[in-house]
Length: 622
Image (cartoon, rainbow, N blue to C red; front, side, top):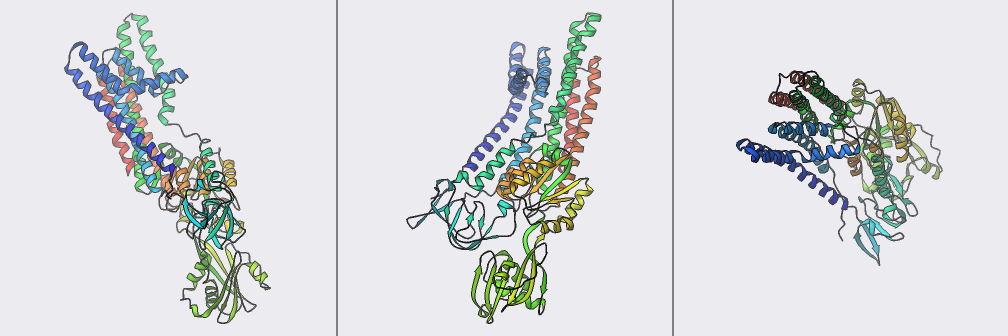
């Protein structure tokens, strides 16, 4: 039976609807322009009716939003300004002007939507959406069903390489599980009959039969996903600059226009002249160049970043990236590769090469990642003829006969169980002790490999003025502190569960802008909670990529300082455009108030400024 991924279908419908809405905005601008041309060719009331139709087509939603906001008491925003200025122009008989104001505004909005959509489409392409199915065992037969259909107490089969779909207890089979998606812990966990397993872990080696102990809705994965959704609601998005700007600008402009209409009229009695000037002043004050160029600069910036393999899901995150004060890293898969290598070989007798050869033969019967790394370090061909009676002791290691010698390779518990005295080794990595025929041979240290660019990334972040660099990890304290010291991080917190990560992150929020960088399902709640969540897109889990605000495509930490520099560059272009547009705007407003500039000069200044600002905005692509 096939399984459906309902989430994805729903998401797709939303996307589709959004695109239709987007195309509609452009069509409306085009239709309005066509009607204006027709209206200019016509005379009398026909012309006026065509202008009115063009006006409504171009801006009915702006007018409705302005009305709705006035009812809610949110009077002064850009919708209000657009509505007053364009209505004023219409009432004064400057019809083409009134329509142009709204049509230009819509085009600017369209650019902004395009930016977000483009980014969203790249994100969806990234998500490899796998419907997770369960193999239910009933009457000796397996059937593939969706995890929601499996009841508590039923048996499921989990083959090597599959995700465990539901929480349960192992009935039969021995395997090791990759729980990195849940705990962020890179070392696999060995399980056997009687051990409990969590949904979301990946079964690495053996077949497991699992008795389900929790329905899908109560399973670990479902709970984590719910946690992600609820923490998403607790983060207020940075408000758009223009809306913030309009809150101050609009009341000032409206007040100035009202004074311009009333005060001189009281002195010279020429009411019509001054009302006309006041409305011209309002039309001039309409910040079209701003409204178009600011979203467009962000759009170009987002496009430019995505070419560098940095996906930014919205303009507000770019603003936050430019002002980062604290960066919090997850360890495994973010700063380290989650790949293991032998970093130290310490023989008690004989040479390093002999110890490695012994360990490699002993571990060859296991397909645990640690065993793989020992074989890789030795680099020779394993001779199966020399190996006899292989026994894997879950959670401890291997007991194997090599060339007739009984060899034990594993952790301290294995040595104790074999009645051997192994030294207590304080190392940051995982220690594998080796003994042969009851004689201790030495130990190997195996560590998670650092990403080659991690140290460089930390150095560049410090140069970029990021004040605090923190690492949160589920890993052991010694391992975490070793890595933090090697990279030059300012603080580290180890042995954390996913819930603890959120608590730690919340203690950092508030002083400055905080980014969290992670890659696993367990990081999703923290990614949502940070001011800006940054996910590793190459190996990252679906949940992390969904929850993040920024995705680094190829898991390269060095992309983070690059993203910050890129965002700062984009923000400086935004500031140039704002200063330029407002400077020209204020000059023309002054001329309008003095009666020197008329409506068309106002539109000309506006469109000219907009064009120059747009050209400047395109630089953000580079």
